[in-house]
Length: 234
Image (cartoon, rainbow, N blue to C red):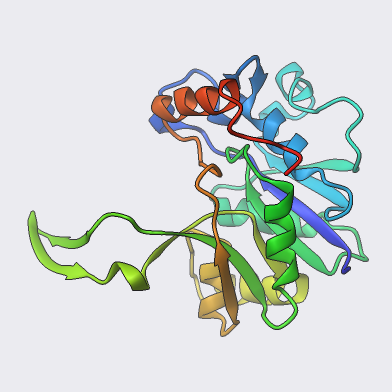
């Protein structure tokens, strides 16, 4: 397997959460969201190192220490975040070990990553520049303009992107260089690889792999854990 590093992006401020602390530090079932994320990404048969990108003011803090699981099976290093998510990921790329060939980029507030999900993404990388998980749409989708429906979209051709997103390191670095040279900002890493001419494959996403951004999401995450719907070993 290619040497793989995970960049966990945990630089968000959590404005929609209306919390006094960034959303990645909010506890679910007694542990910060970020604790669960790190724990479930740290699968040594797939990930050899973790780069955690976070706000500079939290480096070395007690709240950060509470996010690092004991006996973490892979090494973890910390990197300062940037003004935007894209800047934070780029900072994380600068911190990778020299031998890394594959990069897995993951949101710090997606704590429910299954082991089999990591494998599915990595297994499909060989014939592409990147692989991302997507969730198919259940609802009918409408394009809205000025408060009115402009047209109905074909939901079979549309999906919601999740993380982790997995890339060949060289392809991702080229995409970031292209984006910065051309003043482009994307909402995820795949969009940058796409615009730079790369091939990005999709795999079926996981409904339990939720992104926690609102108080409702926190309640849902606690319910998932309390009911035992997430099995970290699967």
